[in-house]
Amino acid sequence: MAGIKEIRTRITSVQNTQKITSAMKMVSAAKLRKAQTAVLQMRPYSEKLKEIIENITSASDDITSTVFSEQKHSGKTLLIPISSNGGLCGGFNSNISKQSIYFINTSLYDEFSRGNIEIFSIGKKVRDLLKTKGYAPNRDETDIYSHLSYSSASEIADEIMFEFLKGNYNKVFLVYNKFKNAATQEVTVEQFLPVASQKQDKAVKQNNYIFEPSESTIISELIPKTLKLQFYNALLESVASEHGARMTAMHAATDNASVLLKDLKIEYNKARQASITNEILEIVSGANALRG
Image (tube, rainbow, N blue to C red; front, side):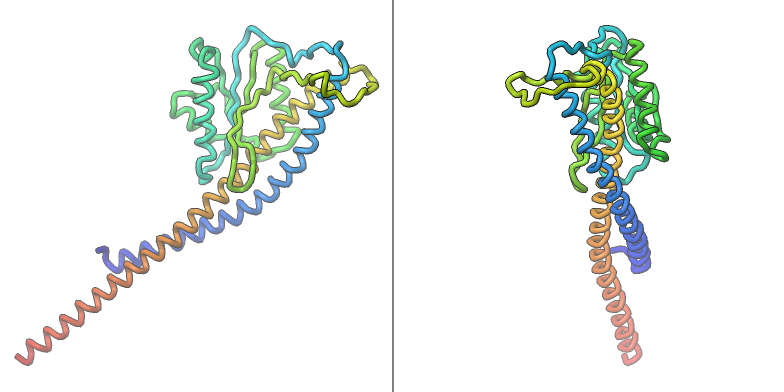
């Protein structure tokens, strides 16, 4: 059994740790509220924009595919895993790393075996995790979270879209945590480029629109904006998921600290009781020795 002093030191240490985890939980809860609001406000806009594109592409059979939907046969496949810069958020970052490696070794195995894969990591944690697994990213971005906005996300999206148009990339995929609720994040692999066809079945057409300007002109304007919005939305989903995962992890750590404190206090009381019993025995033995 550990000594009284040692147990008392451990109790103090656990209490201090519990204060830190409790504070981090509260901070994450406040940040989560803000991030969740941003995600929920973005989703209706994103869904409506997709609906507009679907209506346009299904309204006419004469619309040709845009430059962003062309299937390219040259260039590399770009994978963009999105994580956080900080830790202490459970499996949030490791899940992105595991899913990225799994996706490379399954769906992208042919390209990977030919050395035709590039990785552009966003966030320090996934960059470091992939390096340790032998999948070092070709590029990384870690500063975007300090000034995350639609403008900063658009700059990165513009760069990726430009490289795609040049033929340097034939496919681009995003890997990120999609926010469900504070306790649940869904690891999502999403094709960013080329843009998947949005054409609907003729049998489900409900509206007959008159477009001004032409459908092709509207499509050529909307597709780049949709891509920028898709990239920005993935970042917002990841940020909200990060705060939810950290809040959940710190809540669990705080509860675990409470359980550990309870066990340590029981152990401390046992050690203290044993010490008192030994002292009493020594006193009684000494008294008996004096009488005898």
